[in-house]
Structures are given as C-alpha cells and as structure tokens.
Amino acid sequence: MSKTSTQDSVERSRQTIFFDLDGTLIDHFTTIHRSVAYAQKQLGLAESSYEKVRATVGGSTPVTLERLLGKAHVPEALIHFKEHFSSIMFDDVFALPGASWILENLKIRGYGLAVFTNKIQTHSNETLAHLELDHLLDCIIGTGEIPYRKPQPEFTHYALGEMNTTVENSILIGDSPFDYQTASTVNMKCYLLATGTHDRERLKVETGSDAIYDDLFQLGAEVFGLELPKTVVN
Image (cartoon, rainbow, N blue to C red; front, side, top):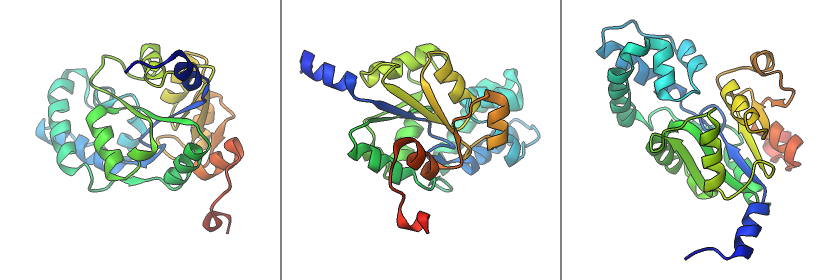
C-alpha cells in the first residue's frame, strides 16, 4: 500500500539518527581479526596483529583486506574471510555499553533509528538479531547488495531514501574518519565516539571535529539530554 502524502510528510519531518555499527554500537573486532587471520593463513601470508586490523576496519571488508593484504589478494581473501566469519560470527561479539540504553530512549522520544554500516548486509542483520537490538531499529543498511559504501555520497542518499528523510533532518553517529567523511560529503551533522577504531586524540587529529564523546552514555546525555542509568551515574 502506498503512503499518503500526510504520512510521507510526517516521516520526513521526524529526525533520523543513523548509527554506524562496528565500534559504535557493537564490538566485533575479535571476530573480524580472526577472520582476517584465517584468510591470510589460507593464502600463506603473514598474519596481521589484532591492533593493526582494528585500526584498519571501517571502509568495508574489501577495503580492509586491500589495506592489509594488497589489492591482488582481495578476491580470494574475501571468499575465505566470509566463510570463516559466518562460522564464528557470534563467538566474540557484544553490544557496547549504552547501546540498548540509547536506542531504547531515542525510540521512546520518536526518533527514526537506523544502522548505516559498511558491514555486509547479511552479517549486520544476523548480528543485530543475535544481540537483540534489531527490534529497536527502523532499518538496517549494510553493503553487498548495492554497489556503494561509506563515504560515497550515493550510499548516504540511498540510506536517506530508505528512511524517507533528508540530510537536514538527520544525524550520523560513528567512530571513525570514514563516518565523519560520510557526513561531511553531504553536510550532515555528525557525532563521533572514541569507542572503536580511533581514540579521541586520533579522531581529533584526523577529522578536526570537536563533537567527540567517550562513549554512548556521554553522547546520549550531552547531545540528546537523556537521563543516565543510576549504575552509570554512581
């Protein structure tokens, strides 16, 4: 059934918040590292350290693999990565502190909520369902099914269309320069978290942004005025 013009207008006037996934709402870095190392082993290459892999994540799996293994190895490495990642996907993943808290509270306030990630679409869907966060989201937008990735503006405009919203009514929350660049290319407001690939100092140096927060609790309280849980206050 098509939406009425009134419904469409109401949705487009509702403020939408796009959350990056890895390093923003969840920690999947151990699984990613294990999968990269598995691919490298299958190809007879030296294994990258956890720290190096973590610092490289953000631009999509092919970009991460290219940076770590070189462009020539990406097609075969991607096959091995996906195979291993799918088999261990839930072994080490966990929601970051404050993830369910901020989503639940923003949902109550009527915000449109979406995950906007360079993580493969199927992996994003399954991981969020496993962590029981998917029901708090209006949309999950990942890569693999369309030919775009962050920071390409085409991907951002696709995400805006999926949420039936505009740049002016949207905010992007992420943890890396990729997220900052994604927002900057379309003039979208962006807040960054020092919970993923970059600490606060590196984020400041690489983006020049002052809108950097230590975690989801600080961001939720200072940006959206959310009341902190007593366990955090104490």
